[in-house]
Length: 424
Image 1 (cartoon, rainbow, N blue to C red):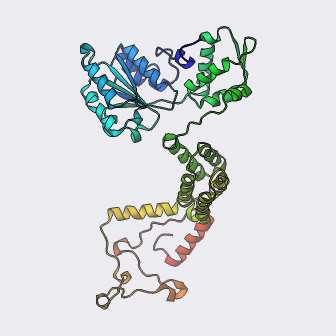
Image 2: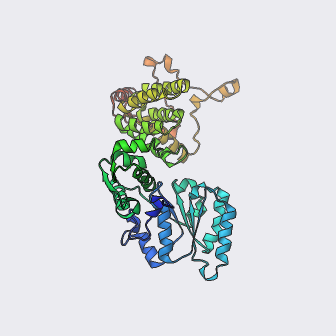
Image 3: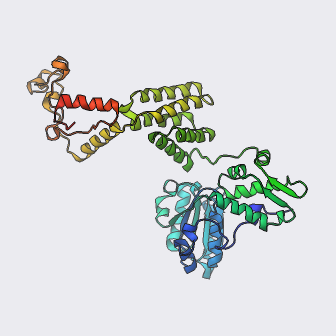
């Protein structure tokens, strides 16, 4: 009978045993140099679950022989923070050397994070905050500016296999078992890259050994792990990462990648209307005038998922995603409004040409408002060729047709109408 779970028993105790994050704690790397030099800065450790943030904080404290205080932002608040700071203040010679580790620091409110500022700024404690969320969104700027931010990377497949191998070789749970990992796919997938979760699953599998032999197969993992909770926080970093990957796959004309990221979002329980709204934006920003029907399809997709909901809405979303990904692409409308807004930002408020101004009363007509305006519908071919922009901007072009059949036709038409004025 084991008091601590396998993941805790296998927690590395030294930098030499610490697996992964070679870009930070490998020989000669920035954080390792700080640790070995005894100059440990306050820091934010940002990375996905189960990649060693807590372990690294403990190793730093152990290596530098500093008092270590750990609290979790899930069940602690300002009261607990103040108690730790008071304890450190009373510690005399250890004041200024103690490490305060706050797990899930992004769960602290602004006021709770504010309570740390004075102690960090005065050097009363060295703060190590761990977060799975982008600190630029979730940690107050004043605290970020007082800390170094280190990004921890997910374990590779080979590293996850090493973790399993180390546990089998070193932990007493497996001392009387012969373990054969015949299939890795579902074991690794069940962990979602989280070493803690991986070892928890491995510990569960040990109960299914027969005759002193544990044969790890995909079927056994499915039997033991009924379902793995996908790492998807609808308000967190993965929410934005997957939405970004979906849109960029559409932009890159890859329907297969786009449907994959759509599936990730659907399986994670993402709001179908959120997805549909992103598709409407993509239809204009990335496809636009190359295929104007894309915007119609995207709008209808939003209406459809709003009416029918999920899970059937996934079919409509899939149809739209594939249509957008396989459509010709143009960002000309996006670029046009961006260019025009930039002009507006840098230009003074140029007066509207007087012939374009409204003249709702006789006085304004007497002042010349609207005088000389040519009604294009009455001009030959419904085109007058008159000036529409303020005089200093005459000939300024914002819309540049994309390289696709529809907009090449538009370019030819603009060239025929305006000749060389806009450089089409």
